[in-house]
Image (cartoon, rainbow, N blue to C red; front, side, top):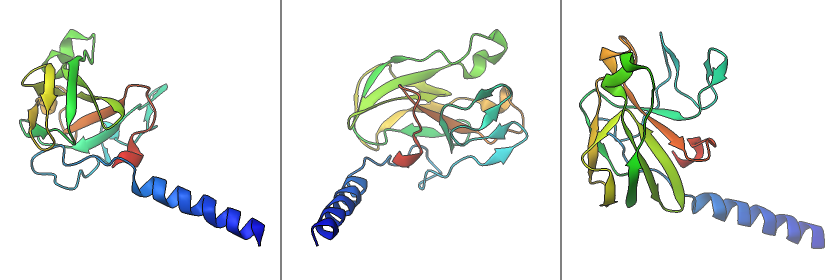
Amino acid sequence: MRTAVLLFTVVLIAVLSECEMVKFGQLCSGNSSNRRRTGDRWGQGHYGARRGNREHQGLDIVCNDGATVYAPFDVKLNGKVIVYTDPKKAAINDGINLSGEGLCFKLFYVKPDKYSGVVKKGQRIGTLLTMQSVYPGITSHVHVQMCDKSDPTKFF
């Protein structure tokens, strides 16, 4: 009996923890469900997908070039992200560091309206840059990467 009660308690705590987990709200106009990039000629968008000799360290959320990017919950803007050092990718070399709901994360390929301050859930952060100009045929997307490079999938 004691083992059954302990097991029940552990399962209940796990279920409650999962229910209370932070979930990202809508990131892009035109994608209210935060649909993920699956596969295209440039690869796949899930965390851990192969990128030659390395692994993809984020999750790609479908977003059209020029679409509005929204705050997924109340966030603090913590400065610019430099995505690439390659000048051939300058058209999409922007992003933003954010924190909120106890999380620290980055959004790549976004031209933010500002790099500091606070943005409320659902308010505009900026616009998606023109991914097609650098990666023709790719499924345009926002790349979401946790600051510690852990898997963000559970938050979607």
